[in-house]
Length: 74
Image 1: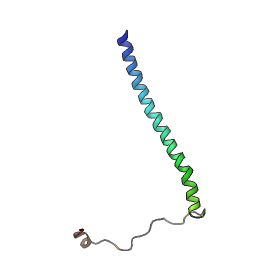
Image 2 (image 1 turned 60 degrees about the horizontal axis):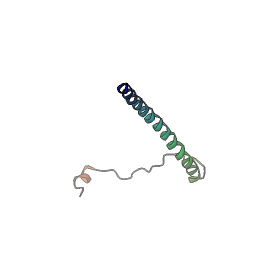
Image 3 (image 1 turned 30 degrees about the horizontal axis):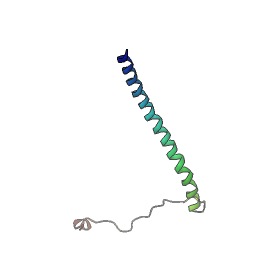
Image 4 (image 1 turned 90 degrees about the vertical axis):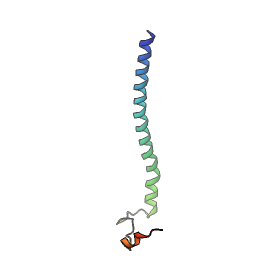
């Protein structure tokens, strides 16, 4: 009898571990996005005075890199 219960316990623990992995990952994903959204949205709105930016936020590079510039890096 003890052998059967040991196998059942082992199967039950493997099932519980798999369910725990899924539930904990879903909980952490929901917490991550809700937590950062609470801080990111007001910061983003207050940073620019509440107006969305018209274009991209990155700046174009002025000088292009030539192969000669890459020959002697150090």
